[in-house]
Image (tube, rainbow, N blue to C red; front, side, top):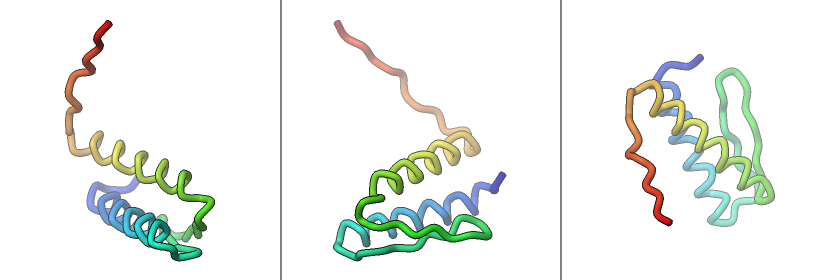
Length: 73
């Protein structure tokens, strides 16, 4: 498992890669520890899920609490 600083660095790299994809780059590369993964425009959803998982892990490690879930009927 990666430490909080490493996860934050990976998140910044992944968010930058997603931005570059949205700006029209055909391929972006994201390092994930000792290996790198390449994403193309068709993989934007996969990259967004990776970003969400990084954010979730950062929240868990940093003790961040999410607000309550409000439901209305």
